[in-house]
Amino acid sequence: MVIPTGATSVTAADSSSSSTILAGVFAYQQARSLSCEYASVFIATSVFGNPIYEEEYIGSIPSSANPHYGFRGNIDGAGGLPMTMGSTPKRWFRSWSSADTSAR
Image (spheres, rainbow, N blue to C red):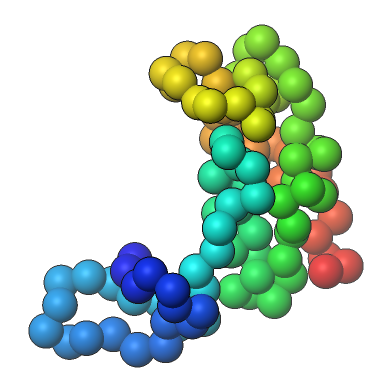
């Protein structure tokens, strides 16, 4: 996916490019230093008309030393090696699948 710096919307693809551009996908700055996964969920769900906002989703993922069960580390921290912060896709899908997204 290619999103030019400063763009607010991407609506067309350059046929001479090997890149993929998705219509309706917009540039978005994540709200917290380590909230990239939450930001990507916000972007994806917004494109389909049912946004799950970062803060809402952050509240649905518990903290845990084990990234299979929750977010490991400080979401406002400086980052680090993958073993010191973050969570796993398994945890994300478990939380997302239990959320009531039909009302959005």
